[in-house]
Image (cartoon, rainbow, N blue to C red):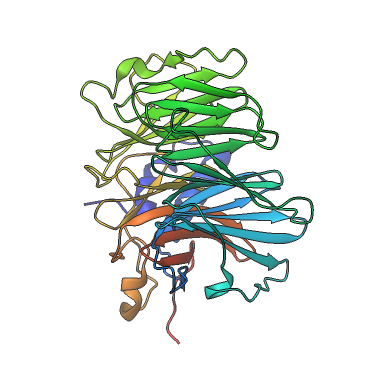
Length: 394
């Protein structure tokens, strides 16, 4: 049986200094609150005449550079000059935008304010925001990159076609400043300055790149064959450095997500459901710092995760269409759903108890005026969960 959040930390109360004890008790309370999440808003993100389903969702705040990934082929939110941009993409290639003022007034476009901007001909595989740009990519042999300026008065939407001899099958992307890293078939592709179409670096990996993460001058790539490579953008050595001494390559255990955390930690999730953190200061050591057990997956590549801005909590979507929650401080089994303060008739609304009808393709956490929010993309719907808040009777 999984431990209740308050039980996980009860043994620490007498052993920790008062300041540390207070911090742990606060974290324990947050665990309990997040596990009780039941307040949800549901919105249809699909325009009925296009028929695409959500394959990714992303929300980002340009001022804090916090990004979140969720479901419709891709969705993202950007705060720019007092306005809030939301972007999404779907399985048939449509890229949508929605502009909301600081007063949360949505422009009257399409369903729930979503305006179709452009069709990329194939599934939108990623959306990234940085500075004054939003970048979207498409999957398949005929890949495209869409450049959407957040300051619409300065430039129009621009779409670049990628020669299949340069790259195809873009699985994922990450934008840091003006540098765009693309996870593609058998290689990592980096574009130094996406706005000015600067030098393109093709870095062979000999296995598809399913996940990408960037930090300063370093780019990390997670591969289909389980390899994790690190590339230095100051030298662009095409070989890169292999990390973790091939821990997930024998046998192959595909890397579905990479996330850089504080204190030089790398969060890694695998296609078999394994979730671990590692110390990048000792990249050859195969022993993880923490292991989060209990996730359910055996073959799904697009199995999203979401980490809160404080990097204390991890949400992961399972192959069984359920979401689980872990404390990144302790790892171990997922936190149990907490319905003690929720009326019986609303138990099925609890985030950790819900069986979604369709696969969960994307998730993202954002900080809203009402508090922390988890966005979940499933089918043609996007669900907005107010973390720590539950439905009350009456």
